[in-house]
Amino acid sequence: MKQLLRTIWRWFVSWNVGMVVAVTVFFAAGFRILPTVLSGMGAMWVTSAVMKRRHRRLPADAPAEERAYVQSQLREARALWKRLRRARYRLRSVTMWQTVSRLSAIVDRIIRAVEQQPHQLRLAQPFFLNEWPAAVEMVEKYVYLSQQPVQNEEMAAALQKTEQLLGELTAAAERQLLEVLSTDVWSLQTEAKVLEQSLHEPSARLHLPLSKKGE
Image (cartoon, rainbow, N blue to C red; front, side, top):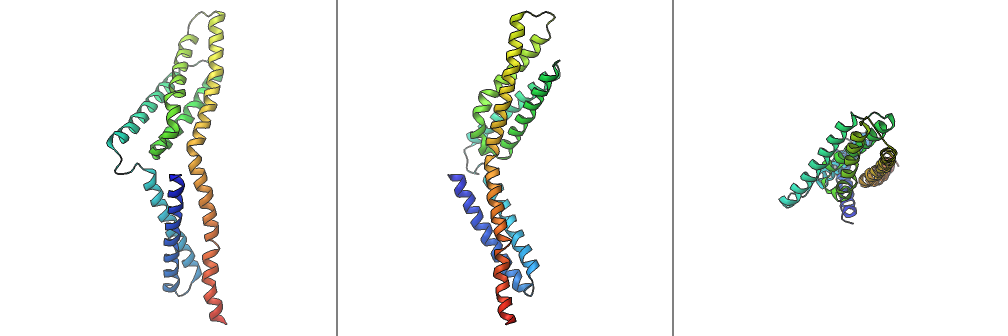
């Protein structure tokens, strides 16, 4: 709900700033439409980008403990990611190499997304605390057992089960990434609608005085 209110407020401010700049340029540029529209759109998008960047950060008055906690969670997630990368180079199975590479790439994206938007940790934290450490441990144990010179049926079954679970964990990581990005997707869709309206409404309004003048 707070994110929705912030987005609405950002639209309201950027839209009004864009309209003020457009009207100012309209009269200053001798009633020329093209610079008016471009300047209005530019002002709107710059204002929106600045406000979005500020909202993505933790508040300046956020407790030091909160900021430190977010950074510690990201450091731990990145450290696990590096362990997974090291273990990947010792895999002998092409199928497992592809699965672990896919998992590594997806988690890297999740970590980067949270680094850019620390408030999104609330969405990624369950994954960071549960599935992610389990996945790294499983890969490391898989590598250790797969490199043994002998195997029995029990070991082979354990390795096969691990391959299956890692596939499921990769799917879970994909869903987690989509959840973290869902706010950005929704914001992009709504901003596209605002832009679509801005491409028509300002020009329609600014054409009105010209038509009257011609009459």
